Image (cartoon, rainbow, N blue to C red):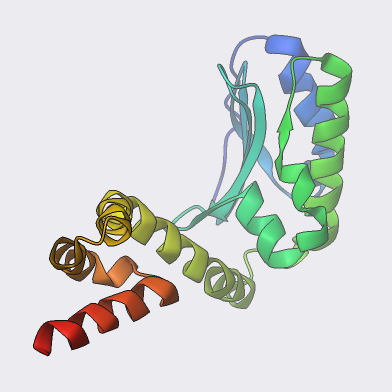
Length: 195
């Protein structure tokens, strides 16, 4: 597979593009190429793996995504650090408008990715399977929260107001998203409904 370098314009806000190219130079040594770049985004690719590095246009959040080119998996910096090196999770929270701080953030993130994600950077299928297994429960919980969070909130309010039939109906609707405490409430309501 031949990848061509696609360049965008300029060095970007706060010199972002040049800072990324310097901090993530190790990717070029590993055979990655710059596939895309613009003022707040740089994408590195190698046969079947990509690394996106970005600086939020409005939020100024520094972020990274890693995944496989021909697969649908994409992992955020927070997911990577949570799964592989939880002690470094604070690096996933870098937001800055200062060029020197931006350089430090990018260098720190790059060093962690280089040290901790080597198997992923080579496209190792087993490494991606392990990462997916580690990330899947958190993704499922976030999906359930997004899907059922508002209904669960209304059920909690009904519970607190002692409107038990309303709480039971709402907890029933949101059962896949219930945590242990709310499942006990639903079981209690079901038991007392039969009595």
